[in-house]
Every structure is written in C-alpha cells, then in structure tokens.
Length: 106
Image (cartoon, rainbow, N blue to C red; front, side, top):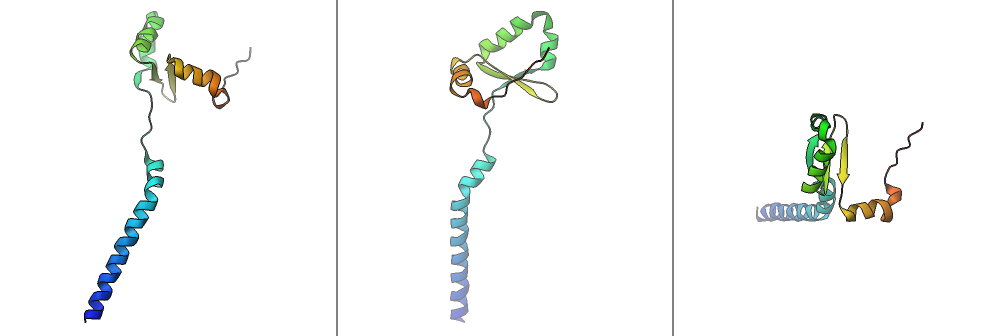
C-alpha cells in the first residue's frame, strides 16, 4: 500500500514539474503572440474631418499640437499622422524601403 501511495506522489510531483517546465518554456512564445500592440492614440474619425472641413488645416494643426503621432479612423482603414521629427527621420532616411508608396497616374 505504501508503494502505491509513493508512486502516486511521485507521479504527481513529475506532473507538476513537467507543467512548470512547459510554462517556463512556452512563456516567451505566448508573450510574443498575445502582447499588447502599441498604437498611436485615436483622435477622431473621418467624420470629424468632414465636420471641420471649413477649417480642416486648423483642425489638423490642433491635433498635431496635442499629439505628435495620432490616428484618424475611417470605415475600412485608418490614417496615421506624425509630426515627430524622430519618426519622420526613421521613415524617410533610416528605413524608407519598408514603407508602402502610392503611385498616382494621370
């Protein structure tokens, strides 16, 4: 009877140890998959721009004074605006090839 109890205790200890090792090994993968994305703040929608169409440049200037980088949401996409010199340099100088370009044909 003691042998059965010892075997159950040993099996439980091995199971707990395996679980702890699995959690330790899988933690970086889980953190990578489920980490919170760091997006710029949303300052309005495309409808806010339409409401402020008569003063659109002043509206955009007011937003850029409050936030150096911000998003404006549209129904199926969003616009990211930035006036931060570090972000501008990164986009134009350091990592230009990674950003999409729009070609407009006449």
